[in-house]
Length: 463
Image 1 (tube, rainbow, N blue to C red):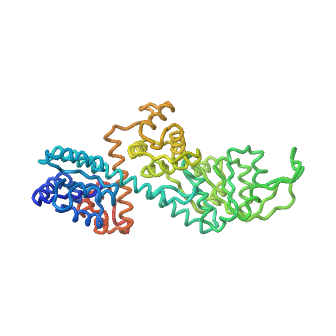
Image 2 (cartoon, rainbow, N blue to C red; image 1 turned 60 degrees about the vertical axis):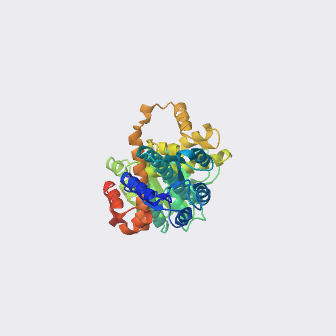
Image 3 (tube, rainbow, N blue to C red; image 1 turned 30 degrees about the vertical axis):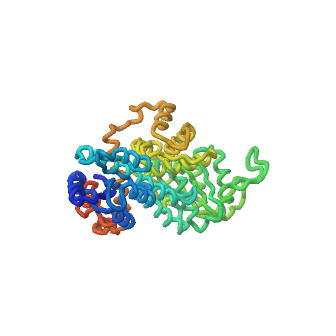
């Protein structure tokens, strides 16, 4: 089931227009189909209602099809227009293609040709509509700390980050590697009352145990060999701000004990110092490991776990929000072009659709790196499917290794992901009211209910 884009039929022969609407209605029962009988009526209706596809007669009294084409495309550039013409005026129809018509059909119209051209026109309109929706979403991204995406999972994560930002409680951020846990931490900090103070990140596994204590808490001169001067630790440097302890599950039991004391007392004791130093730091911690399992095998302190897990957020894997792949890909392409100081590149709908069919075991980080390679190896300003194939070849990825789905399955998945995202947004705006959602989308109530049933979606959960 696909989302309706709307078909507008324009022909001064009322019987022909009615018959065409009936024929298309049987082939596309979920499409909104409207027939009018003059160019002026068509233009007036286009100003009031959205349509993705228009079929118009070429020869009509008053405003002919060519004039209608010019005015309609001028006001609605993404509208797909199919010209209907008699055999003797095919040359004129070909000229219409040059000024923006998508295709043309000759009268009398053969149903097989009609269905083929209309299906292609509808597909084009859906792709353009999805592209525009993604571009609008991308335009709402305000800076590098914004969590990019519009899936239900990412919207819930954004709401969660905003909620926990209002307090100073410790937050444990969970998620697989590459999902963007550090980005979530930066978002929490930017939304908090500590935003004007520093956010400092400590990559716990990257620092040897013998140095981590000094890095966190500082040391005094002479505390150990090589300590030739006092050094402030990260806790003191982050005073008044936020400290992210990245991959907290990898710190040693000894450091865990001293970290617990610092969190409980609100003070740190530099290595070799006699007195503790009070600190005011908001702690965020991240992990890609199940800390509960580490507690069971005694490699992580249970009391530290509960101290860190006052509030908790889980960052979804990319496979759990595959409908965000398209907007993430465009976002990363735009930032990559900025980083390389080259003209912005545009990603074709076909390229975007293909990316949504790929598995991304490395999550958002893997997608970002792949898009960076695309930006480097693609020539020109348009990034096409051929460029993706080129980069895959450079990566040494075969179709078998990529787990590429059959074409029909891949296409169905893209359409289903788009439909689910569209319906989620639609029901959210309509507050779960199916009748209102049907009105806003141009779908009939019955068609919308069929989609909800197929996708196993409950409109009541959006009220």
